[in-house]
Image 1 (cartoon, rainbow, N blue to C red):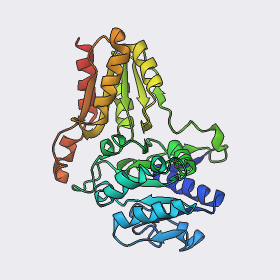
Image 2 (spheres, rainbow, N blue to C red):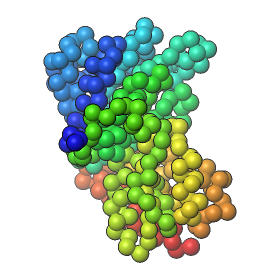
Image 3 (cartoon, rainbow, N blue to C red):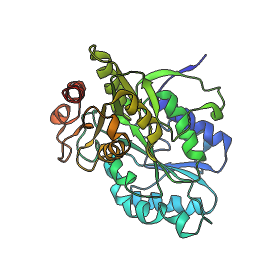
Image 4 (cartoon, rainbow, N blue to C red):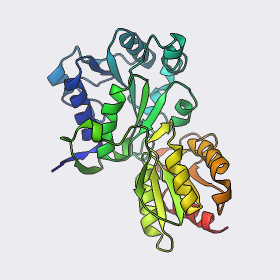
Length: 326
């Protein structure tokens, strides 16, 4: 029998399991200690593992990531929390010019087993710097693995897989889904979990493939259920870099249509690269162009406009209709 967990609690349980498994794992970030994080994802870890392994840092993201890089060089496995997506940018230099390049720069002599947890995306009524989708910056940078979760089971297992990775992992957490609940078999061995880099067919179908990740997976599943005229297959991408193209290509070759939905802005978003690759590999199987459903190419708006800004069920269904219009 599984344990009923929210996504937030599942990440907490995964962090706890990793810290119990390996004494070199430590957590650091703003308010992650006594407060337990602004979303309470690290709640209770400070009490049980102490201030040496759950470290409250100053409000200095560049310093947090730079310190984590130094710790990784000394054999630790730091898990860094960036409090909100928009707070990442002061740490961009450390991430893009040091963290991502250190293994290659040292000819493989240094690994960078660092996980950077970032709550991302909108839907909580917050403003810019608190509701952004910066995943394209990370996927464009060679040397970083980029993953995101859409359900508690993946949250529990993928945070542990990320921590065990010797590569730096950007672990994107859909903050508006933190409180989604599901059963998680926490007693299963980690070796039986779906690999971190694999996509997942969340719903089987035959007429079109609807690809989503993170917060949009739930919306995609709702769209597939709402469209009673077609059989829609929903693929949860899970890993944004590297992308599991074999799973996507296999699905598209069967269905002949692909709709990609994400919260990130349309231009330069992850959907553009996937659309190009799928067009290259599935050109003679496509019944229509690849359709993208995304946020607008504007800065994140005031909270009263975010329901208009974020792609919702109606916009995803409109994308599906456009795919079938050809």
